[in-house]
Length: 384
Image 1 (cartoon, rainbow, N blue to C red):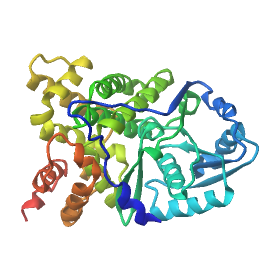
Image 2 (image 1 turned 180 degrees about the vertical axis):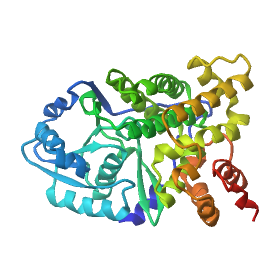
Image 3 (image 1 turned 120 degrees about the vertical axis):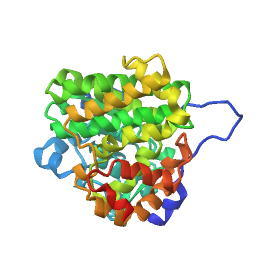
Image 4 (image 1 turned 45 degrees about the horizontal axis):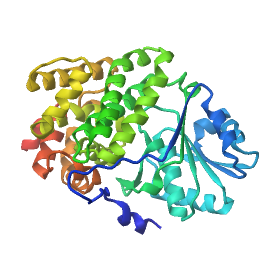
């Protein structure tokens, strides 16, 4: 089944008239307290709900499924960084059950898993995505990230985009602080990479800028326990995802995918480590975009270089405030392990479709420089 990966492991951009832009979003977004009740309006007869063990054991999964239909099956085997084998098992279960609606409940992993299951089932089944974290934005994107042989493969296809995204703020009240921090930096990196990506345009820029401004301003309050701001961050996560799904991403995400597949560090945490260093590398091509984002977020700087400096400093301060590591070493990746895996990491990164829309054409040397910059102590090993 996964031989079909090759068909979709590349971003597809419209090759029409030069200078002409297009924007498309077919996902209906329903947001607010109790938004899950919208499932009752979908008229489903048989529901296949994809989630993880936490939501299954807490009863949230069955409660949610019953809002959509009295006839349902729950697949709760999803784990972080879902594997191709896991997707294959879930696809077989989905085919046997024969649903007319698939509901994805959880963070990015359950949503990506559900999207991949539907894709590989070959059936045209609508997906209702209910994110419980504010980061991946998978509820509105053409992306699903699947891990195979310790490499994260971004699947990219318009058929992966859910028909409905349900942003229920009731599910955000008990978010762990570490999850708020990790997911929050995923939003920030989505927004900044979408602004700099080669597929960016006026609509994606507006979505990404507002998302970045909102997340940067409100993440400290959410991390501190203020639940009243979480719906706004939740919506911002979807906005950033709508932007990058069409504008593209860049080497921050490509590096995060390769590092995450190899070392199993949370994706948003890797983005937090990499993002300031990536801004420096890409600034020669995307300096104006980064400066505009800084000014929109109230960071000032009339000169581009000052605005960029303020932007990087703000990200570093926020990373520290959210108690996220500043280096790969701080995230548990030993510099010696980084060195041993450097060649395969760079190779996987260059093969990642996110590289295709980076504002600067990436090279092996560029990627190695970024990785050593964020390696942490003992990075002198590079010269051994």
